Image 1 (cartoon, rainbow, N blue to C red):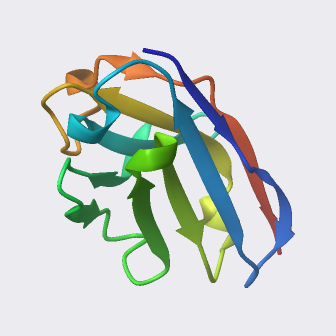
Image 2: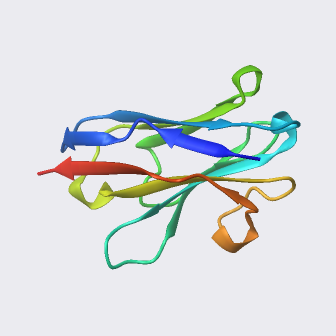
Image 3: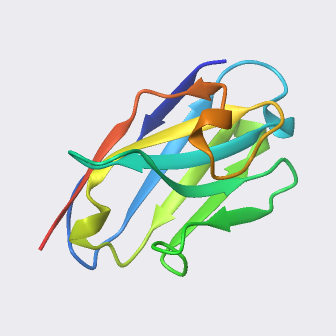
Length: 121
């Protein structure tokens, strides 16, 4: 399984971005998918996840601003990020697992390379 995340960039506070993560390999529709982020000097943290039937789970810090979705026909998950804040600045990673779809990064088997999101104040 290979994951490729893209869509990051530089945006002003209050703006929006949409991240995408394209997955290769079979059985994408049955996998749990997650988004994590890591800011400089900080540990990687959970952002959002989605299970195989589309239920989502969000970190409190992004709830109400970010929306995760999946398109099984395109083997792609998305993270729509609205009302961005400077504290959202980080490298965003997508992750996948055959069974898990929660908030613990150690439980995910596959990781993408990350995409940088920078929010200016």
